[in-house]
Amino acid sequence: MSPFSKVLVANRGEIAIRIFRTLRELGIGCVAIYSDVDRRAAHVRAADEAYRLGPGPAAESYLRGELVVEAARRAGAEAIHPGYGFLAENAAFARLVEEAGLVWIGPSPSAIELMGSKTAARAAMRTAGVPIIPGAVDPVRSGEEIAALGEELGYPLIVKAAAGGGGKGMEIVRGAADTERAFEAATRQGEKYFADPTVYVERYLEDPRHVEVQVLADAHGHVIHLGERDCTIQRRHQKLVEETPSPGVDDELRGRIGAIAVDAAGAAGYRSAGTIEGLLTREGEYFFMEMNTRIQVEHTVTELVTGLDLVREQVLIAAGEPLSVTQADVVLRGHAIECRINAEDVSAGFLPAPGRITAYEEPGGPGVRVDSGIEAGDEVSGLYDPMIAKLIVHDVDRESAIARMRRALAEFRIEGTPTLVGFHRALLEHPCFAAAGTCVGVIDSPELAQRAEELTQSFSHGTTSVAGGPDGATSTAPRLVDVEVDGRSYEVRLHVTEPPWTALARRRRERGAAGRGGTADGAVVSPMQGTVLTVAVADGDEVAAGQLVCVVEAMKMENEIVAPRAGVVRDLTVAPGSAVGTGQLVCRVAAPA
Image 1 (cartoon, rainbow, N blue to C red):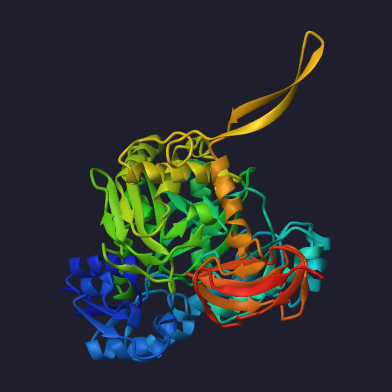
Image 2 (image 1 turned 30 degrees about the horizontal axis):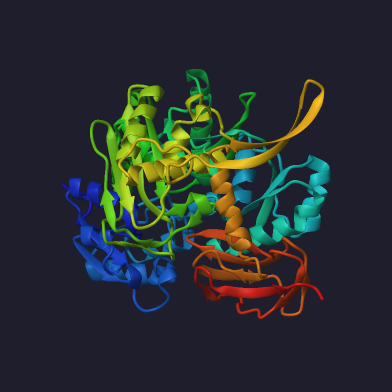
């Protein structure tokens, strides 16, 4: 007997399609919802039936809980699965679902509320004896309070949105001069992404491993863990690569952090699938960071090494069933790696790159899985997360899994918009990744960006490598050198082969300040399509070179646009809430008289 006749998935893209697959295996009907821009999206085509979320801004459609519940009623659905993001960790929405007589496939609203407030969660974990990162338990309300904590705890600190998650609402503070900027940025992001401007402060741990533990808990008092995932490879707190088991965790440590995770879930009165996120120091200390009360993007790697379908477990737990396995049944087999394939332009500093996918071919073969929400001809919207697909591989050990991932990435063909495929190929061949390092300083390096561009070009030209610049030519630069021969000084002109990343750096300089929002004549332009969040200047203001002009948000990423030179602001064309296009004039910075 199927536990439900129909389930509405309150999400879009790859996670909606992934959930549909499990629902079909359970004999459950699949109901989709969509915004106006998603009318012909892949997740709509994959569902048994789909419902429009009514008029209104498309960017907000999936956040309108009353419309989601109304769609479930119209469809005759018995339950709602939130996926991740949007309303997945919204306690008020979970209550709305239950008050409508529907089953919420997730933890109780009270557990979401407790763990959704990072300050309350830290206090609860400390009371339960779970180790937490040193820092404040109560919220902070000003930059001055952060500065006071800096004097007490020492720098660096990290300011976090209390209702945050997914890497949003985090700002690092290196010194007292940075406290006000960090406070304003974190509160702004908390308000925008989580409707809660509350922030708190922790000691920022330098170069830790980001290690999280997957837990499952039912309504019958059973709580187990499914091992850990290593999510250390990140950029701006956004995960790029995840793997399990963690190369930094042995069996003894796995048992210890697994017990911490189970205790944390028990202290929260948790039910469903959840993730305890933590930081592992070089000394082997493990600290609770937060709990994500939903299915994770990277749940896939855990599924491959355990053989369990985590979405299936979620559905059955919500239907009142006990866990299908005990802790003793959990065995980790082999090694799994996931690469997030986002529509981002590495050569432009990972700027989001919305656009139409003109060609799309997924890799295959043994041990390769692709979770995707897009097909050739589909549009990657600038209104939502830039993820196109998740590429996951499984093999007997880490070295074999890396080789398999490199092969699969080389087969992955996506055209029409820049993606991270070339970046991942470059990263996985880098010695730091092979050595299981944290790769700090490598992710944003010009060397890796250049190699990513070479690999991207090599795919498009059907070759395996490209020497020198993107056109295959080796670039040189003249250099004058003083030499001495038999006591006589000579000035010699040498034509020196440039390092392979120099061409990329030159192209970035040629774009000049345009990549940061400026041009050589002082015009400040938006380097991307998006929405203006804040404007920090007004017409007539005097600004210094590098001073913040405005913040533009696209695909859940904030980008600061700064003045390309010192001068006076003229012809300001934007305001908070304005939509801007790539290359659109923001203002001009006139040279001082």
